[in-house]
Amino acid sequence: MNKNINEKEQTTSPCISICRTDPRTGFCYGCARTDEEKKIWKEEKTSNIWKKGNLNLLMQRMSGWQLETFKESYSHKMKSNVYNLGLSSANISKLMLANKIKKIFKKLTIKIV
Image (cartoon, rainbow, N blue to C red):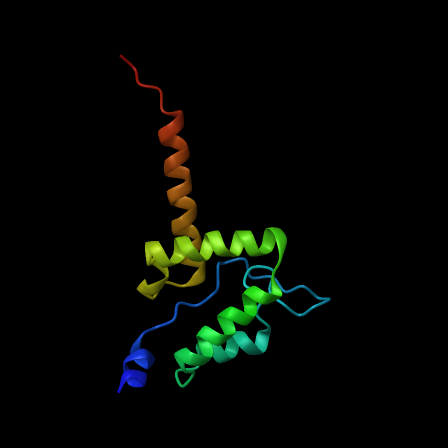
Protein backbone atom coordinates (compact mmCIF):
# COMPACT_ATOMS: atom_id res chain seq x y z
CA MET A 1 0.00 0.00 0.00
CA ASN A 2 2.85 2.40 0.78
CA LYS A 3 4.22 1.77 -2.71
CA ASN A 4 0.93 2.89 -4.27
CA ILE A 5 0.93 6.09 -2.22
CA ASN A 6 4.45 6.89 -3.45
CA GLU A 7 3.41 6.13 -7.01
CA LYS A 8 0.62 8.71 -6.81
CA GLU A 9 3.08 11.44 -5.84
CA GLN A 10 4.19 13.35 -8.90
CA THR A 11 7.88 13.85 -9.57
CA THR A 12 8.47 17.23 -11.18
CA SER A 13 10.16 17.16 -14.57
CA PRO A 14 13.86 18.13 -14.50
CA CYS A 15 13.35 20.48 -17.46
CA ILE A 16 14.59 23.98 -16.57
CA SER A 17 13.81 25.46 -20.01
CA ILE A 18 17.36 25.41 -21.35
CA CYS A 19 16.53 22.94 -24.10
CA ARG A 20 19.62 22.50 -26.23
CA THR A 21 21.43 19.21 -26.80
CA ASP A 22 25.20 18.94 -26.68
CA PRO A 23 26.06 17.30 -30.03
CA ARG A 24 29.09 15.59 -28.52
CA THR A 25 27.40 13.91 -25.53
CA GLY A 26 23.75 13.85 -26.58
CA PHE A 27 22.78 15.36 -23.20
CA CYS A 28 20.62 18.46 -22.77
CA TYR A 29 22.65 21.44 -21.52
CA GLY A 30 19.90 22.31 -19.02
CA CYS A 31 18.77 18.99 -17.52
CA ALA A 32 21.34 16.49 -18.87
CA ARG A 33 18.64 14.19 -20.27
CA THR A 34 18.93 12.36 -23.57
CA ASP A 35 16.15 12.68 -26.13
CA GLU A 36 15.04 9.15 -25.20
CA GLU A 37 14.85 10.04 -21.49
CA LYS A 38 12.75 13.11 -22.34
CA LYS A 39 10.29 10.86 -24.16
CA ILE A 40 10.14 8.41 -21.24
CA TRP A 41 9.41 11.27 -18.79
CA LYS A 42 6.36 12.27 -20.85
CA GLU A 43 4.83 8.78 -20.95
CA GLU A 44 1.91 8.33 -18.55
CA LYS A 45 3.01 4.80 -17.67
CA THR A 46 6.45 5.96 -16.47
CA SER A 47 6.69 5.35 -12.72
CA ASN A 48 7.79 7.94 -10.19
CA ILE A 49 10.36 5.43 -8.97
CA TRP A 50 11.98 5.52 -12.44
CA LYS A 51 11.73 9.32 -12.56
CA LYS A 52 13.41 9.75 -9.15
CA GLY A 53 16.17 7.32 -10.15
CA ASN A 54 16.66 9.14 -13.43
CA LEU A 55 16.78 12.49 -11.61
CA ASN A 56 19.65 11.15 -9.48
CA LEU A 57 21.43 9.86 -12.60
CA LEU A 58 21.04 13.24 -14.29
CA MET A 59 22.72 15.05 -11.40
CA GLN A 60 25.58 12.53 -11.51
CA ARG A 61 26.12 13.48 -15.17
CA MET A 62 26.49 17.15 -14.28
CA SER A 63 29.38 19.01 -12.72
CA GLY A 64 30.55 22.56 -12.10
CA TRP A 65 28.35 25.41 -13.31
CA GLN A 66 25.83 23.08 -14.93
CA LEU A 67 25.15 21.23 -11.68
CA GLU A 68 24.96 24.42 -9.63
CA THR A 69 22.63 26.10 -12.15
CA PHE A 70 20.44 23.01 -12.33
CA LYS A 71 20.15 22.70 -8.54
CA GLU A 72 19.21 26.38 -8.18
CA SER A 73 16.70 26.34 -11.05
CA TYR A 74 15.12 23.02 -10.06
CA SER A 75 14.83 24.14 -6.45
CA HIS A 76 13.09 27.35 -7.57
CA LYS A 77 10.82 25.30 -9.82
CA MET A 78 9.84 23.03 -6.92
CA LYS A 79 9.19 25.98 -4.57
CA SER A 80 7.22 28.08 -7.04
CA ASN A 81 5.21 25.13 -8.36
CA VAL A 82 4.79 27.13 -11.59
CA TYR A 83 5.68 24.09 -13.66
CA ASN A 84 2.85 22.03 -12.21
CA LEU A 85 0.15 24.31 -13.65
CA GLY A 86 0.09 22.61 -17.05
CA LEU A 87 1.78 25.51 -18.85
CA SER A 88 3.99 24.93 -21.87
CA SER A 89 7.75 25.45 -21.55
CA ALA A 90 7.48 28.56 -23.73
CA ASN A 91 4.79 30.10 -21.51
CA ILE A 92 6.74 29.21 -18.37
CA SER A 93 9.84 30.90 -19.82
CA LYS A 94 7.76 34.00 -20.63
CA LEU A 95 6.31 34.02 -17.11
CA MET A 96 9.76 33.72 -15.54
CA LEU A 97 11.11 36.49 -17.79
CA ALA A 98 8.17 38.73 -16.90
CA ASN A 99 8.86 38.17 -13.20
CA LYS A 100 12.55 39.01 -13.66
CA ILE A 101 11.64 42.19 -15.56
CA LYS A 102 9.23 43.21 -12.77
CA LYS A 103 12.00 42.80 -10.20
CA ILE A 104 14.41 44.88 -12.29
CA PHE A 105 11.86 47.67 -12.74
CA LYS A 106 11.14 47.70 -9.00
CA LYS A 107 14.82 48.31 -8.38
CA LEU A 108 15.02 51.02 -11.04
CA THR A 109 11.83 52.83 -10.16
CA ILE A 110 12.44 56.44 -9.18
CA LYS A 111 9.77 57.90 -6.99
CA ILE A 112 8.72 61.37 -8.04
CA VAL A 113 7.81 63.62 -5.14
